[in-house]
Amino acid sequence: MSYCRFSSDNFSCDIYCYDGGSHFVTHVAGNRHVGDIPKLLPLPAPGDQEGCNAWVAAHNAQMAFLDTAERAPIGLEHDGKSFSDDTLEDLLVRLISLKAMGYNVPDFAFEAIRDEIAEQIL
Image (cartoon, rainbow, N blue to C red; front, side, top):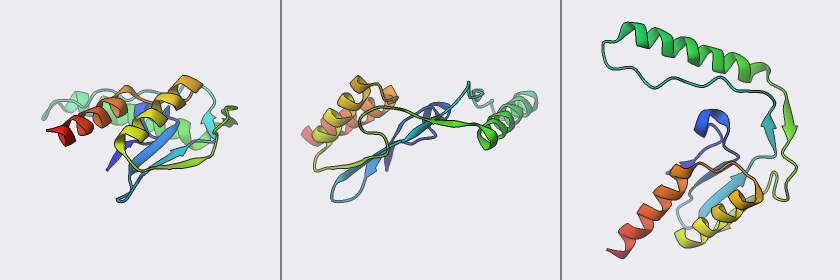
């Protein structure tokens, strides 16, 4: 299970972290896309053909941008590095640290890890 991927938050996430079975793995991006990545629309309701068409058009625009986008180094200390943590608590501390350094880490990753920690306590 992954907590976030490089594709999270419309491809603006700098972190890919997941449960590796015996440990928690974090990969840090070495670069970012240059420019404003087109955003996806919320998924339309079932049967909303107009909304579906708009979503597909937004997805196609995003993919076209990503196919040709320049990339530039992030320029922070842990660019391109990978880490292994033994516990969810250690993973949480690592992600907090990476976010404080300036890496893009989505809030939902913190929420998922905190929820999982809370479930372990119960």
